[in-house]
Amino acid sequence: MGIIIPIMIFMIPIIAIISGTYIKNQELKLKNLEQSPVDKETILQLKQAVEDNEALQERVKNLEYIITSMDESILQLHAADRMDDAADKVTKLADKIKKTK
Image: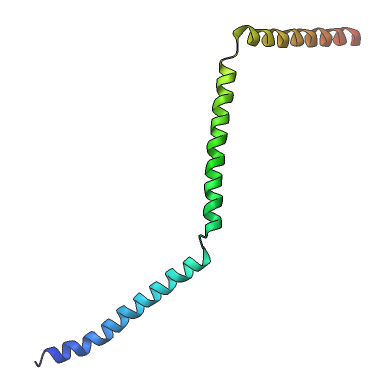
């Protein structure tokens, strides 16, 4: 019995320190929750953003399919038009250079 009383005397301040730290920790957690609340509106906005993202991904996939499945002749036609435009530009530039001489 003689040892139990001094141990209990020293345990009281240790328990007070531990419990005070625990209470402060819980108060900080509560304060952090109050500062960054996650309400129903935020959750709905997040769900809507996810749905929009999925829809946009589907649209991009469709566009990629359309672009990659275009007929080669159409693609070559556009490439030929660009080459003709480039040739015209070079010719015009050469004419301007000749005129300035």
